[in-house]
Image (tube, rainbow, N blue to C red; front, side, top):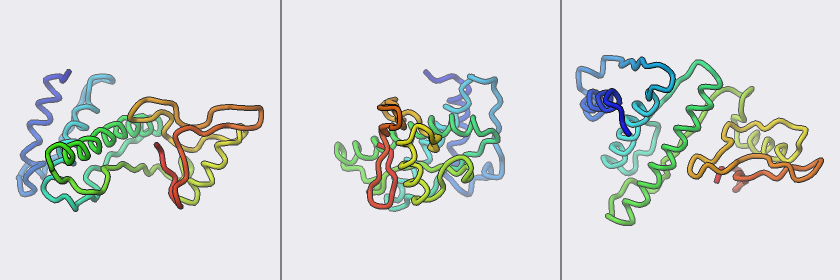
Length: 181
């Protein structure tokens, strides 16, 4: 269910989202509500609209559409997991609409990235591959942010299968990339 302020926030920002020359593009919108009030859904709703609109306008334009910034590490991790679910849902829509209606939103998947600094998560494919290998060792710390699949909620990461060995669920190497699946 949507709350009235969420719909109002999305509606009041549609014009400036659609039209880059809208005078309201000079404004910064601030949502203030207590914790658990629905702020994230409001801006993720607008982000979803902007991402789909961009793909509908130019199916080859798969660059960065939305930047989100948080001041606290834990909040960054939590919101990344929520935004990851949105990225999965939008990519599902991209694929479904192409199959069902022939709507072309490009061949590049809708994706999400995270930059929080090398002390928090691997910042290169090489470091991610090393972290994936280390995740099989119960004595090493798990270095990835995602702990649950943003699509289905299944556990991701190390699962202890022996005194000296973990099985890593939901993460694998494909070529030089580390893939979450």
